[in-house]
Amino acid sequence: MVDPAPILAPVLPSVRLEVEGRSAVSQNTIPLGLRRGLQRRCPNCGEGSLFAGYLKVLKTCPRCGNDNGRYRADDGPAYFTILIVGHVVVAPLFAASIFGSWSPFVLLILGLPLVGAATLLFLPFIKGGWIGLLWATSSPSGHPSDAPSAP
Ligand SMILES: [Zn+2]
Figure (cartoon, rainbow, N blue to C red):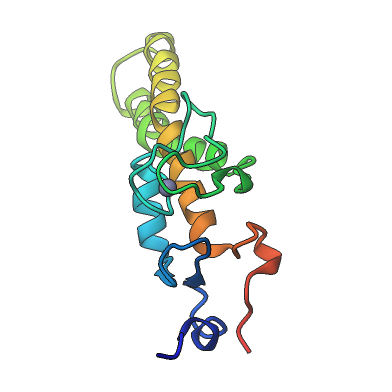
């Protein structure tokens, strides 16, 4: 049987060869990587934990041995966490201060802990999703610049 991965790799960057006795071809789709990452699971197998603690990424998946430490999240998760918290929490607080009868001081006292709690709640899940996205879109080396390009 002909292995389709080398033929399809330039056309479908989601097709990736696996080595070391695992399946010959796996589908690395963006929704799959996002879903597994948002669940804080290894994006490669979906079973192993992605994090050793709150935000520390396990360098190697305990289930499949995937090198998850090669995906550098950098500032992406923080950016998207701020974006989401800004829309989910801060915008309603501004609306409440404009249209409501609460004083800005009360909104500040209520809003600061709410923003902090929402940020701490969302950040690990968004970081997992970000790493899942990097897994789905990067080359096996983990560097986006090495990803196969369309002809
Ligand atoms: Zn894994």
